[in-house]
Length: 236
Ligand code: BV8
Image 1 (tube, helix red, strand yellow):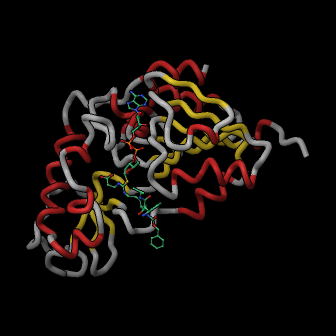
Image 2 (tube, rainbow, N blue to C red):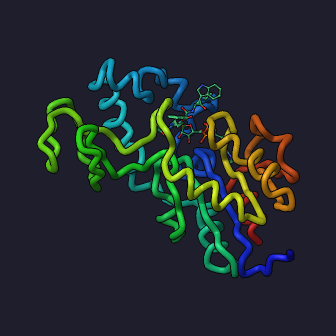
């Protein structure tokens, strides 16, 4: 059955590479975050149970990375926001990033599968609140009063990413799966292209990245270059 364009759904997976030209470091490039921090020490649930303060220090320092006055959406974020405005069907951005640059560019249909900055969560009562306060092991939860149970609302390694059912439902109805600025090394996000190939064989798949990702051969179309150049050109 031919889907009319109005039903056509575009799913765009983004990673740290789309925010690089806005001044936010990626994770695995030669100047990336994981070259300065051991992810096992600061971004796993085991690290939280082993040394909460170390995890919170990493998070507190991270707050400064997004808050700089010069950290603004770039032309790639703007192009995806325009795509959402002008495309007659649905456009869903599934981002692995915790920054809010997609929203800053005007995108409204954004799903942060690895959590997002500006929110904290209580491990005792699971309440999620908007806050970019600095956290320490003595901070009390305003909802349940638990001490030292507040953590960033970020998905650590070994934790289930957020809203996976919604993501797979969107992938199952997409006509285009676009992957932008991700190394394709972290699952389940890295497996989305394979999911589309298997479940939606008619969908087109394209990778827009600075260099070939881990899963580059799985994409029908591959365009390489800085996101601020290749994404606006692709959206055109
Ligand atoms: C889960 C939060 C299951 C912190 C993050 C062995 C094999 C396979 C899988 C696993 C395994 N062992 C464990 C796993 C699972 C694990 C995983 O995949 N590990 C990898 C490392 C092997 N995954 C998980 O644990 C996930 N959970 O599987 O749960 C489960 C089931 C049941 C019950 C419970 C659990 C959770 C993963 C989420 C982890 N949290 N971040 C934070 O963000 O502060 S992941 C972290 O990596 C970030 O979120 C980041 O977004 C994500 C992916 O990285 P990228 O965004 O791709 O960034 P990267 O630096 O890697 O690449 C940047 C790219 O941009 C490069 O390609 C570069 O070329 C490009 N680029 C650079 N500049 C530009 C550019 N492109 C365009 N323009 C430019 N200018």
